[in-house]
Length: 360
Image (tube, rainbow, N blue to C red; front, top):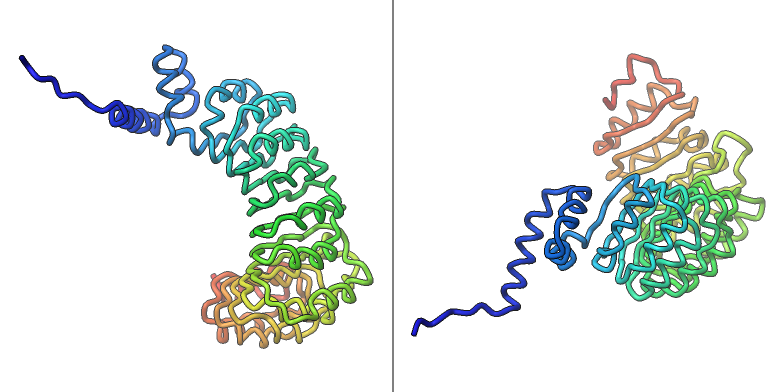
């Protein structure tokens, strides 16, 4: 009798999955949909692929594309569908078929709403950790993300113009492990309220971007000095508090408000102060020595004292846009004192054409 060597089903299944994934990696999504439609066997094989569907990255998706993705939705872990024109109904229907999504990026999707966001939150509450919905103008509330709060690491809602301060504060008060919070260009967001509260709730926050959001009010310095008066050390590495109108009305933010914050952020690597023209040299003297990126657009009091930047030995990028007191001499001082400086923006400054190549 001839003996027949058998292969364990689990090993065969693993081999088949590896073969399928090796083939799929060379195909775009439209081709995969075509292959799936050829036979039930191929469709089932594609459904079993764990690698190909783990990361789905498509731009400009339609409602039809979302419907064709539905059979594969439970396999998706990282979902990037930027600039989609799919309808709200298509988003909601698709979201209800997902599970275990960890990263959701729908930035620039025209009809993605808070209802669609809620559908994703409902179906992925135990896994969702990163949400990117920049330029999703119909997202008015983040309340649905409360059920995911404990696991959230990144929230990016830049230019979601309908978001309110109170709504954001309600959520971040429940996100102790948040690392990144991006709220640039949200006019109804009070930047000082966010600054005053977020670091008390999110001790691991690394990046906070509020540039171009609501106005800094007259009581800005009072609130900030009170919030950062204690000896608390922040994990913060990047902070953007640029003015919403850097060339308009004078910002009330002064040394009294900013210095306590800077002293609490020794690990800061990037700082954006665009439009805060009421700050003095004391700010430059207090900057963390590990700073690599600094934006001083419109901050003429600061750019009048660039020699103070000589202590920032790791500085690599410096923006001094629209600072008339930045001259040829300024550039030569920086060239001599900051040897790691490789990128300098001095547009609309008083620099001669001859010396514009100093940092070329």
